[in-house]
Image (tube, rainbow, N blue to C red; front, side):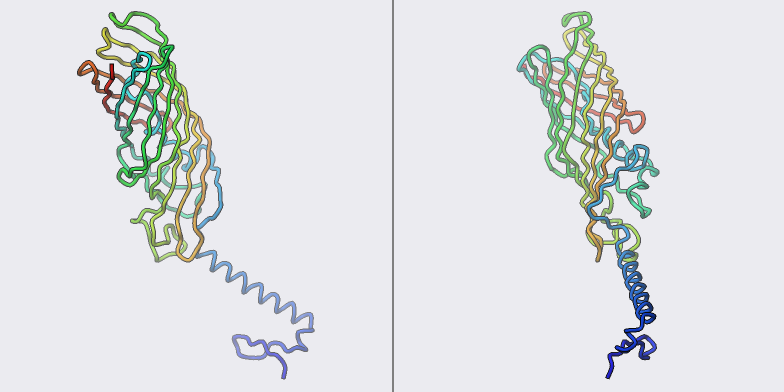
Length: 320
């Protein structure tokens, strides 16, 4: 009794003798190929949004690049409102809160690295708090630093460090009468911020495998600002250092990195990486006012015209 391959009509299709017929072999191979193709399309449909091991390099004018640059503005380690120099080995501590603006709806829509229409969750925290410390070094150099540990603020968990070196160059006046200085400063910020950006809990769905956020657990995404820059500005200090103000234009080199972390239902884990390099021009203006011999309140307006504008409010205490 010969081997029979059964079709949907429940009629014999081929016997061992028929399998030696080249025409039958070609027909069978075509049927098998079509079956495999259909299966691959079905599997692909369930994971249309999932990408594993993919690194996307979007254009600098894409929405993805603009969004990464947008959030670099409130994180940038600008002077923060106080540029008063310190004597060698004296130090100053402070804390500031930066306003985190909301990006436009347009740049929240990915276009270069994601094929499914969606809107990113960008309202993780309306405020970016940061401690600061400054130490006076020989030669009139000021070393500033900041570290934000992985303590969750609203829906964002930062782990960021910043450092800066600055040196005022005296132009005119004196400490007793008030002075005018040229401010030279270099800064850098590294680390990451984690949060549910691509697929927060409110966007999860189990109805359409071809749509975004087809899963049961919120994403755990990572944003690395990676920036360094330089500033040159003018600083004015009143007699006795009671108050001071400055304006400092500068340039920042951005090397932001972003990584998705989302598990699709019955599909691959999406760990898409986004990498882009950009350069931005910035302007900052701020000042301080002493409420006592050691304590001062600070304020700064900081803007990257192509991306965002923020303001910072804070306080500082100088140890004499």
